[in-house]
Image (cartoon, rainbow over all chains, first blue to last red):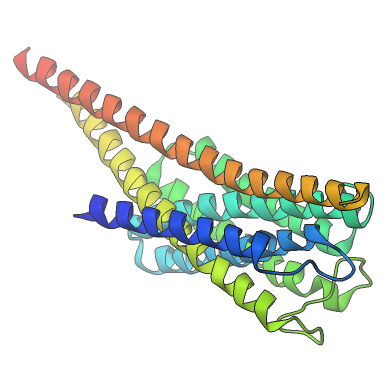
Length: 225
Length: 54
């Protein structure tokens, strides 16, 4: 049953993404100053939103684990962190490609770019930490603490363009900037299939993490026989 | 289409391909991990059966 739901979700997301790419290439006009490359925002920004949402879920999972000591929260935490990192990579790389055209450079040590990279590396460190600790409860405890600490960087990344002088474009959704209604509809419209993809990835990864724990327990049991 | 506009479109294509490629690579790592888990489960089951026989 779960497989069918995941498959249906995957097909729906693929259809929506294909339809969105078709509309953004043929139905939406070029942005006046940036031209065609502007359309990268329809992946860049929803990927960032998805990434931060995953990191928020990781924070909640960490807090829930420390309160309940239920290892399912640990499995959920690693699932959302991993998926958040994938979407964070989409955000960083699409941003670099946009920057190459608009700024003429692939990268600059700007507040927003640098803070996002540091945030991404911190969450990647969470996955490295997990590999370094073998004992499951100790691993879960340390991971929960690290995911809580890591989240402190997320508001800094989000508000860095307001707090500091930066060459990154100012927010066009929640700030003083404005965005054409058609562009805004496409931006949110493309976030929906990306969220579906993220939910599918998280579900699969969550189940895999639980399976891995069960296999490890069986292995220990086998050694005791 | 002039050179700048063509370059603009080329880089847009790079961006879209990159976004899809990252998600595809992650999906492939999930599939690989799923296969590895199935193998591990088989091995553990076999190990348990062997030990119980002894």
